[in-house]
Amino acid sequence: MPLSSKDRFTALQAGEVDLLSRTSTWTMSRDTALGLSFSTVNYYDGQAFMVRKKLGVDSALKLGGASICTQQGTTTEVNLADFFRINHMKYEVVAFNTGDETIKAYEAGRCDAFSDDSSALYAQRLKFEAPDDHIVLPEVISKEPLGPVVRSSDMQWFNLVKWSHFAMLNAEELGITKANADEQAKSTNPEVRRLLGTEGKFGEAIGLTADWAHRIVKQVGNYGESFEANVGSGSILKIARGKNALWTKGGLQYAPPVR
Ligand SMILES: N[C@@H](CCC(=O)N[C@@H](CS)C(=O)NCC(=O)O)C(=O)O
Image (cartoon, rainbow, N blue to C red; front, side, top):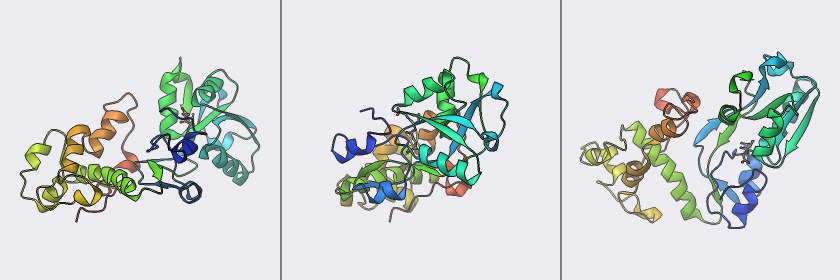
């Protein structure tokens, strides 16, 4: 079910969806005051700005007096207020109900800049008629840890969602891929065996079979494979792993062990 930024949390609260998975930033208020819980960070993002090249601006610190297109019900709106206040600059927000309206307004020249999570800026720019007429400014002005959200009342479902992500990360760390998962199930490495369910029954406590992680990796790949296929080198977005690299490669993605 597609949901706008504004309606996404109420739809989850009301039980219209059981899992909210769409560029939603984990914040304290969303995690503690709505009866909802963020399970993990599956993408570390940060807010940035896009402008038309012909505006001649090369830094967000030169956006004093600018009008900024953004979407209602987002962290983007509140981060803008902080950024311009801290830097003693005036600005004007033009906020829209849907992503489409926001983007169309910016493209039609109704605002000087468009602000959103960096990943979204690169994705939206590809849809423009002339993507090369726009640049993303270098400053990243916030932390946007994105991840899936569930209702707090169902701990088992929460654990399932959380451990699905951790299984994909642990698989990447152990070199288990979509293509070699069956072969790896015969491995003698105890960590590999526990994850793939040939040793122990770790899936049972969350209501799954012992081979739960094996089935995940076989169907969608490990975290790295999924990243590359959906937003990385195998996609049109070509986003670098950056902060989303595994902790063993200098990134932030780290999963607790299967023990
Ligand atoms: N990560 C931020 C912002 C995410 C966000 O909703 N961005 C808008 C900017 S256009 C978007 O993705 N909209 C897509 C849509 O509503 O279809 C948040 O959780 O508040």
